[in-house]
Length: 288
Image (tube, rainbow, N blue to C red):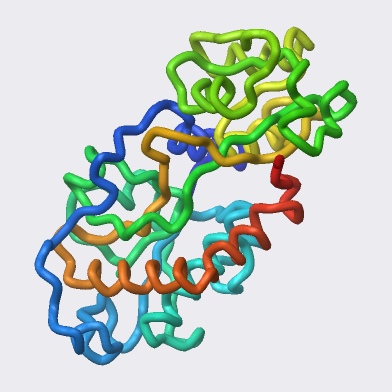
């Protein structure tokens, strides 16, 4: 995310993962034929730099995805995920190196100077025409944002939001989530553009807004002074939006990275990493 300023960078990130509906009918792409079982051993992987796993991400690298603008420290959600995947592939920490890659360059067509890129990139069919994605490592959740001194800022459960006047953008997964999960007593205020919902919160025309969690981090950090993330929750129904590790189109590494991600899921490691870095510690507790 090499961009002119922190706010512009966060804005680009928020736009990239905005809560507009995403057709994820294909959540991964690449060669369909699995390589031989031994092809996933470290010494047989075809890497950008021999003996090293090269991981790309943008700079500055923002919290809670990274910490201290240093992807190599293993702290922050995506740094932790990247090193966990590296470990599954057989790489020690000192065998991992990081390259700076602009956000939109990561999923543009062409050869890549990384083995995989991790940068909150949502998996979409259009992007999958140009690059390969791993299986999803994070399912984007919805979040409730309110003013810190508002009536519903201290809500701990979805039930406590029943009487809230909620703002949300039309045609988004967030609107679906409000209707199917939050189920407020009054119909939500629906806006054509997300900025209109945000302005409604600023002007106290609504008690809270619902956006995807990555956008919520941006709203509270840069758009609405004095706002806070009340909590996050998972949506039900439909095809979820997922982040995937980005790889060069047609790479043989995809199958091995998929196996690594799947193993981390089955062992519960991804869930632990998510809770540590995107949960209460990041100011986004779960709303039950």
